[in-house]
Image 1 (tube, rainbow, N blue to C red):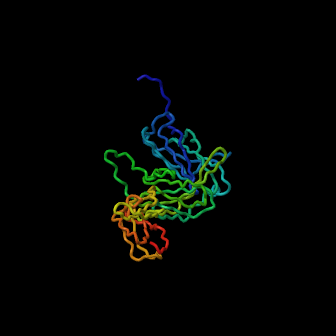
Image 2 (cartoon, rainbow, N blue to C red):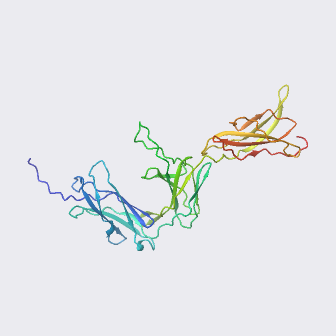
Image 3 (spheres, helix red, strand yellow):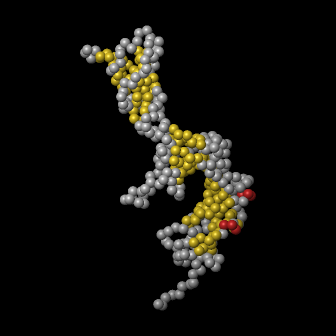
Length: 370
């Protein structure tokens, strides 16, 4: 059909617009979306385009990295994104000396080796990378997983990588595309979701290099985790703020078990009195309630023990337990005590797994008059 003639397409790939660079140890990870259309806005369906990186120091040309030249197959579909990750290993002259701003650009070529130009730059820095985190280890507690590492004089912030090693849970059939809820729910931690399923980043929130510990309060009990750590520093080079990251530390595996007892109750006091007609003797006991916030195992209640003493406050018989089931409130009304006997009372907290806390006792003074 008659129509104005169109120029022949050169099929030049569109320049990359989303290049990013991340320095990890002595390597730089580069992420971008491969071009899916030409400069004529025509799809590059099924085309294989060749790309190459170049590095650029301040006031110098962008030098091509010969080993980076590679081919990328594109789909050319508008509803998909061809995400690409390239890794560049820095030469020794760029991993020593004072830090300098280092720019990366990527360029893609057509089948006839023609290009529409370099991408916008992505910045990182030269110089030594932060030292890796050493001797990462974990301990369990009633509030979560406590992670330690060796203190370091290297400035920066330590960030933890946590990988869930448990088998993936099946999704609800009514919502097949909904993701599983994140295990990181503590407001005291910053969290960064990884592109890999089951991997999250836990930020310690303290840039003090001597702060060599943190508590993962969002770790779920009976769930196997793998932890590793990374040190990060931020440099201000001219108008650009860039981050350097160390290599990941050696990984450790840890599972938080429900074996840690609740804290010891405090403030136990006892008061005996007569009341009623005819008069009956009873002892009222009260103590401070346990704060259940953050406990990995819910509190079941309290256990109370009673032990008779002589005038010198020495036990005269084994202790007994007035309650037959955990006491739900931090108080107890003991109507079986003898008014002529001196007693020591002992209270402990117990959780739903049967873990019992250390005991708290009432103070007893020796007396000739119980």
